Length: 417
Ligand SMILES: CC(C)(COP(=O)(O)OP(=O)(O)OC[C@H]1O[C@@H](n2cnc3c(N)ncnc32)[C@H](O)[C@@H]1OP(=O)(O)O)[C@@H](O)C(=O)NCCC(=O)NCCS
Image (cartoon, rainbow, N blue to C red; front, side, top):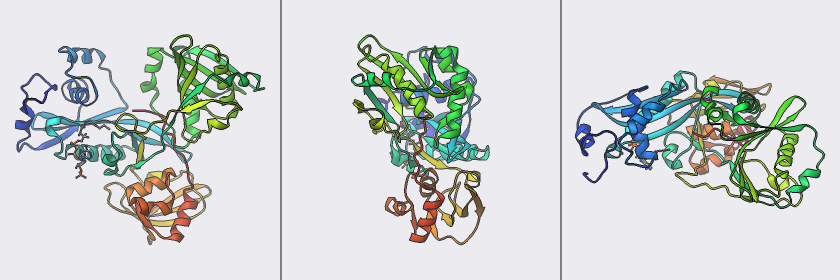
């Protein structure tokens, strides 16, 4: 026990073991100064390089800023902060409808207090509070998927990490593409950039964005070039990037194109640098097919799925009624959702005029776990696959109806937290 560093405060090592005793657990919201002595030290220990400098609390204090889109919960045993999780309010497109989404982040328990059920209690409370304040769905990036599977989350496809090599790219310069490219520092055009991501939010399944206030850091840091592909008075593609020297690489963030014109304009921009950089890196939505972009293309797919740092995201549903209005095909199914504090119950789901109607009740012909429900809503598993994963029991007729209601789809989460 004495070998375990206690970085949370200057109290002696071992304090946590004593405090844990029989003291009751309380879970409450923490903000402002109290973050500095509760959540931040646990985050530093879980995710940072520690032990921290002795003046770390002063450094955190200097950076402390209000974050209206965040809720931080802390579990205390007696007075001791022992576990924490952060809920972020984002917006996500789910089958064409933009819904309030909870992003779960900063999940950590003090090493002296692990495996005592703290995080189960904290996450259950966080999901409940955020559901009650209108969040319909929730997503996260797991250190290990099976941990969050216990909380009703199902896996999403991983966005692709692409390294486009310069060889062959000059061909794009000869393509006859309408529209134009404009080139800026992100700090100068942040409002336009955010508006462009909002346009994609309205169009792309699974896409999520932070509030404008939370994204402002990009403009304040001003560390990226911003390229906009413009066509018919709209921004149809964006790429933020940095470069790291002649002959080295151009490091893009996400290559976001709303259509083929936007993508081609961005590729033409990269092609102007084909002698200057050896390669161009960027993230792509999981369903993009760069192999079909142009002839003689040369790229490496460097996508890596591996916890804890390169995990594919996961998602779950927090409110079945909140799904009303998302895109749905013409069919009806009654399902029983089991084993979950938020979405359990019997629901009749009907696609009417392209949109989902949700009614409680009905005579269920399928049983779904919360993962099974999330897999169908997000389109990541076929109904016939659910039983293979342990996510439900669906007969052939109900599988056909659910397949029509929720056709296969490829969520691209985009926001990272
Ligand atoms: C992961 C972590 C937050 C778990 O916290 P905890 O308070 O020990 O978790 P709990 O005791 O509430 O356990 C919750 C459930 O997960 C299980 N569990 C706990 N740690 C686990 C692990 N490392 N792997 C798989 N399952 C685990 C428990 O058995 C329990 O299952 P049950 O409630 O279904 O019976 C903690 O180990 C930690 O801080 N790790 C380092 C930081 C980290 O990885 N954070 C997650 C970032 S996404």
